[in-house]
Image (cartoon, rainbow, N blue to C red; front, top):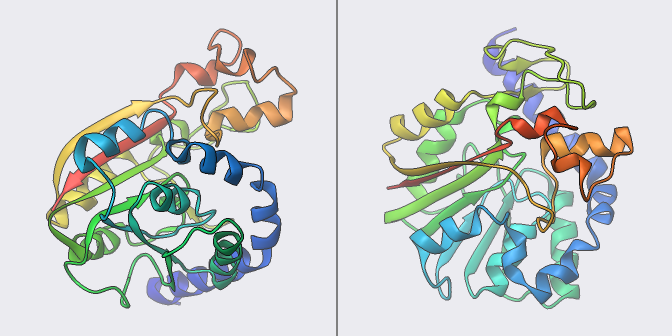
Length: 269
């Protein structure tokens, strides 16, 4: 079986998986949406929003594309900040649940389009001021160069791509325990058992550069208590019954906290 056939099969399986788990996934995050209404900036990690402001300025009237929109927290945040937002996801049920919430909370004017983030074939060229992806997108992507080529295609001249993701340095470790336990090589990118990809820092950079982006800035950061979504090493608190208000953020108790937790990169067309 060729690699292309295998990847296409994986993508179909990923789509089916997210369609099946979407209702439960949205129910889990239900408490976050009213918090976004109170303060739309909370739709983004405290370390990421200043970067968005630095390069995008006033978001009112800006056209923003959010591929692999997932929980749509970023989509709703951008919408409340005055942007014209297009939400894309490969899962029909993810978009269905997002539309239900958008109607419930009167998040008006959001465009929902079922799309593979690596293709974006229903999205016009030179259309957007910003393409934004948040944590948990790239892990499902098997063609990063192709995806970034399409990100650049749909951006206006001078437009930006901003993403944040789990830092690749965290990927070799077991994220179910506070014990620092290496379970794989940094170079082991593919995990056929769950159809995911542990991309390295060089893969993010090379995909953007090969697509023709100019990298403007990179940041490595940790989540803080104010962030709505805990990312990566904070998840172990659920398994270890540690005190989220203190222990999880203390690297002397939780060694994971000594590692860079998230990677953020801003590039320009």
